[in-house]
Amino acid sequence: MRAAGDLREAGADILLFAGGYSTARNILGAVGLSIPVIGIPAGCKIHSAVYAVNPKKAGKLTVKYLRGGIKGNREAEVMDIDEELFRRNIVEARLYGYLSVPNERGLIQNLKSGRGSSEKGSIEMLSNYVCENLLKGTLHIIWPGSTTRAVIEKLGLGSTLLGVDLIYNRAVIKNDAAEQDILAALDSYGAARIVVTVIGGQGFIFGRGSQQISAAVLSRVGKENIIIAASRDKMLSLMGGRLYIDTGDGAVNNSLRGYYKVITGYEEYVMFEADV
Image (cartoon, rainbow, N blue to C red; front, side):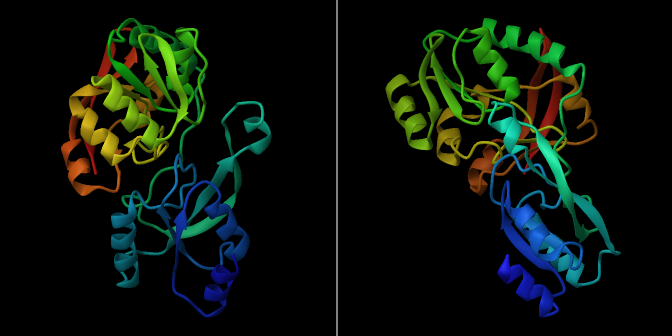
């Protein structure tokens, strides 16, 4: 925070910062709306609308801004986890204030969307369908979040809301698995599938929300073994857009590009293209 304040006082044209959940709140406390900022995403499930879509686009945005290619700035929301609700195992974000960002929406990510009133029913149906189609003799790597947690709850198993859970033959192998736990499980069990959801309003499927499902994990599992499940409301919020991948490994990112069938209910799907 002190460094951000010093840059502001020195008359910097724009402030770049890298981080995740709470970094934007720190920058908010240091500079407020006094200087435009660009966040470089380096965390998971980033709720705030002050971050570029990925690090490369943060660079493009900075160059475009400094060359005068962007007309003006706009105020964007700074969001973070509500810590009181989190202590009760509920993940919700709250608004802390606004930062000034370059007025270029194509390179800045959207605000992470919340849950709509119809989302509960959609999640109920899609979780039933996913559970019925889990394969025997296959390791299932379950992405964190409320949508995928519903799948594990349907199985009568305990889950980790913000962690990766490993399931084999409808039994928990490991809760809150780290990257090395997942790689070790792949060595032991062989065949594997990843069950992932979409970050609403933003469209990220990999590179946000779970750093444990790393490029190394994804390269071993492969695109054909990725199951994407998301509510109808969540996918409607992305209509006209794409899904995004940002693992930090260009070769893996490119291998995962293309179209995916997204489960939105019981035997209900939409097709979405994933890009980097």
